[in-house]
Image (cartoon, rainbow, N blue to C red; front, side, top):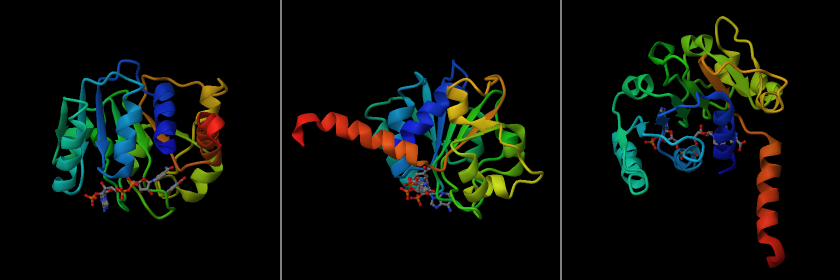
Length: 202
Ligand SMILES: NC(=O)C1=CN([C@@H]2O[C@H](COP(=O)(O)OP(=O)(O)OC[C@H]3O[C@@H](n4cnc5c(N)ncnc54)[C@H](OP(=O)(O)O)[C@@H]3O)[C@@H](O)[C@H]2O)C=CC1
Ligand SMILES: O=C([O-])C1=[NH+]CCC1
């Protein structure tokens, strides 16, 4: 849940205010936790799901349709991406699943998978069309295959912490990416919440 909470915070600061369509790429554990947190940021009218196996994608859609009616499985990744205002990539892929040529104006992409220096989930065109924000510059330059392998080399606009405290200004009309890799501050915040809510039980 802490990863999905971090994505939701990044989306709050980077995505267009009037986001109506969410696309989730992936149908595993992170897809489920992101479904829960992303709905707290925007009131989505539709959720589109793409997964490389249809069976698991449809199972995920059926599950979330119990609490969110307007959800649809797309067997074609382009269809999901090109209609979305916000995209969440939560796949264990080593090669790009999202292409820049599919992106809508002003879209915000949360890239949560591809956490190894040799793994990709976005193609170079996607990287180069978007303003790039990360959780940690140091981590991103060592761990993100999408950043390390991108040609031409992609510059990082800022860390999400710098956006939140106002040091880094964002133009929400532009296409944006939040590259998430996970940082210790998120674990500390999650641990603190658990501790606080346990209260007198411990
Ligand atoms: N940024 C961060 O802080 C964190 C990132 N992660 C990363 O998020 C990603 C998802 O994690 P999680 O949901 O827990 O993993 P799961 O194993 O639960 O789900 C993985 C998803 O990726 C799909 N998938 C597997 N192989 C491929 C492939 N070759 N191409 C496209 N899709 C594929 C699976 O589909 P199917 O099941 O149908 O095969 C499934 O939908 C992982 O890469 C993980 O490392 C995880 C935690 C924290
Ligand atoms: O921070 C984290 O827990 C992880 N980051 C990449 C995979 C798991």
